[in-house]
Length: 330
Image (cartoon, rainbow, N blue to C red; front, side, top):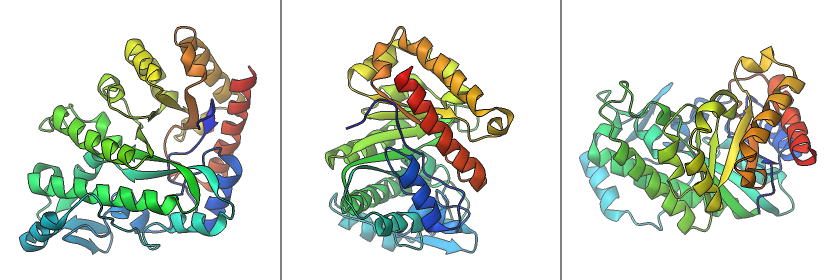
């Protein structure tokens, strides 16, 4: 299903023209994905986008929070079941519906994404400004809500694609265990992710996790995920330290999605050929001791492209295509 060095994206795109973003993705990526469009609407940012339908949620101008209405929350929790769905409307996921309009022939594979439960609960606040992660009831509410979002998204994507991949976007994982989140227990953060990953896989979809920072890769690689996506441009040297854990992950038919093409200022500091050469050297180095890498690898930008301008996003697409060609042909 996943060809060696197939290309895909993380999610966000810089466009404000919906179909332009969708067309670019369909033209350039082996595994298409739906574009999250934060410059198009506040609703497209990673926390608001998946807050729609959350019990007690309030959208107030340019902010979103939960109002702790105990009656509403208790009723929702008492009625929750794993068959529940929470739809994403076009006003919160315009790129998802744009893809549906453009795709005429059924695709073999498609990638969706959702904000992971750790990042979601450590970003969303209640009406008093407290992070919902630190309220046990709200934390569970959010996890169940994200499950309902996942089920709906997978069912929606299956209307035009055979096989589905869902990435959990977890940028805050890089800070868990540091002084910034000293009161966040690693085991609890892991449990939240495990539950959502297990739920995705129970729906016969592949589960991936994306973290664009330096995190505890030993812990992440031990999760029952199918794909690990990370910023390999910046953190390759730190990641490769976990050779034994990477080997075990590959032996379980896990895939590494290498974010070799930078989405930061480094993009403007380097020529295309420099980016490609640096990537080839890294793969050559790690594949000498882990030969499965040459089979079980995907290629991506280092993170989402939503903060870039359109020409640079187009450049990244071209570089990824060329990088894939060079990886395969040597």
